[in-house]
Image 1 (cartoon, rainbow over the protein chains, first blue to last red):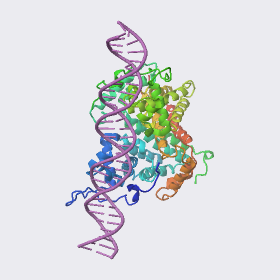
Image 2: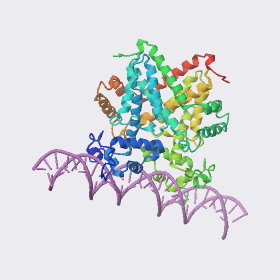
Image 3: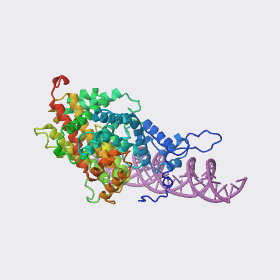
Length: 262
Length: 262
DNA sequence: TACCGTACAGAACAGCGTTCGATAAACGAA
DNA sequence: TTCGTTTATCGAACGCTGTTCTGTACGGTA
């Protein structure tokens, strides 16, 4: 119920937290207490998430990794939600770096395609990402930057502002959706490598085959495709469908469907 | 680490659980103990989720609603994850009902569109859904049915099996992605109606305007569109992009890109 | 009656996010 | 140097969670 009384440690110095701390001065001389930084906290959180998934990220486990106490984390982050938001946004930093060179090409849609693929690749193996993108505009600046970068490409197309807005949102939503879908397919032990992925796919295929053909004709129709498919390839196939539609929309420049575009 | 020792109450009678219980015989005569059923448990879980979101669903709150004890729920469900999976799948029952009449139309893609929209409408106001679709094939039969129903329409198109498989996956992923995206936009108090939605949108618009124009040209470009847009409309816009691409792919029936299609 | 499988109940447990007061270090002012 | 204040760290403690476990009531069968 307390919305923002401004008295929690994390909100006492909201601005000074970013980019502070002398992280890494751990073993210097006779230091007794550990020293952290927002970057270190978020980085270790991501590492923990990558290793053991969302349930693996606990304040106690994170504190142990940082070599400090539980309470210290709350100096940098005011809740677990904020920690997850920052963790999600931090992986987008890589996406931004890898798409930094884009924007100079002749074909805007090809550039969008590259951005979406880079975004997708960052989500591979990170099922925890899907639910935390673009929640808080204040802390998640990388998400906004990626959104805007993609938007700048769409602006080069002959489209309504509304169409541009819709297009970027659609591509981003599709990437998030694929990430959410795929993150859940392996039940639990496949991600850790305990069970062979091939064996898992095979057992799922058999599960599909065991279904009644009359009830599930399509699943029987594509069961072999399922067993042989590659996730990244399938992502690109769906992305290309959407981008083909976008290209079609941009190509048919009938002025009557457009409003004032500048 | 214990994978499946088969000794937990919920796995003692795995088959008999479905569709059993005499749910509703609560106040009959001198009954002392409450009587549940899997359907009642899942239905109350969905109600709880709709009212107070994912954190609102606790075993204690659910037990209180059912008028029983915490332990009883474990007779029908072996974990909270399974409860969420069943809850997510149960809302798809409505989608199936509302798309039952589809499949007879001349245009398969139009039918797919209707199914996707029905799916989307079921996710509106249910941000908790996104993460739990199509996890377990065994318990989540409605998801499979919807997937197959959409697949039957795609089968009518002149496409490779692979293309058919990719198309259905893409549309489903897009719906899930939009649901995941939109579920998180209202921070917390908007969904409960404490804060006006219009006021929230306005403050977010101002937040966007406060950003540097040079850093975020696109966001400034579409900020008015954002303030005026309708979520459902935007969903349909993105869906139509994807379906336009699909129509294009189905129309260009160059036999060389296709394999044996029957 | 005795019995047995089904179903419900609630205390108990370990672990979680979060709060809080204590406290150590850093730093400018006196 | 000494002091006072700010910055940062620490871990015990709280309330709540999912889950387990033990006990027990019910309905049918013999």
